[in-house]
Length: 337
Image 1 (cartoon, rainbow, N blue to C red):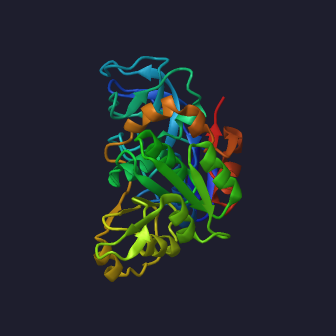
Image 2 (cartoon, rainbow, N blue to C red):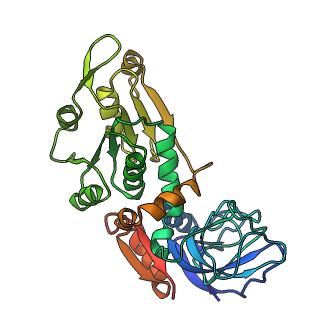
Image 3 (tube, helix red, strand yellow):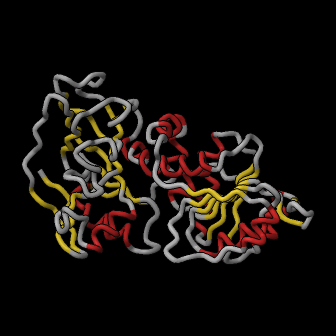
């Protein structure tokens, strides 16, 4: 079978591998769709992850069909449609430095457990939508970390896949109003499609002024005028986001950071103190990997809008190149026959 693997610095190739053998505690999954993550581009750029430097299998956002079930595995059957938890294989993180990756025809999941390794999904859920499960769990964890309350007014900075997933997550939790901020018109259009109540193009509009119009006035702890937004969600990772959030934040507002900031960001702790702002960060999905699955099943049409490009497995190397090109794509998914 073929596997997509980092074979050197800035080098990714198809590699022929023997088909995996299913042990008594394992399952085999025929991969039907696998999303491309920004980390895949990073792994390729640095030449892989030790101890598999130079031969790191890629792909961790997978959905597929169970083709073989070990004799000791409970709750799973051949033919089940599943989404995969890439952190649930004790042999190592799937597509993140472990011995297996999901950009392949057939994936073995060792010591497979229903609800830990995989979750079963309805047969009518499109595989490319199901393959969003892993990145949407990241978004869902970020939403959970900000502890939104029904009726809250929320602003999401960044309308990439995580930001769009956060919009759906916030709306599912009953917040009152969600605004999305970005500089790319097509992304803002998608934000409206997935349920945002309003959008702001920060390249053309004053974000603070527009938030004041949309969310009304607020104040810090000593009565200084601020904006009425309750939750600020950073899925953009640029310093201006935190600067804007801290300048606008009212008393007891929450700022959630899920984006990766590549450089240190100065923080005005005087402003933080005056507003008693809560700042939380979120990484990964300690509990959300299959919590979000029910949301994807229920809101599949909204989640489908997040996908910008679909490539067949034969063109997986092109898919990786497209995903790594700034501005070329939002969410790329590789599909399999």
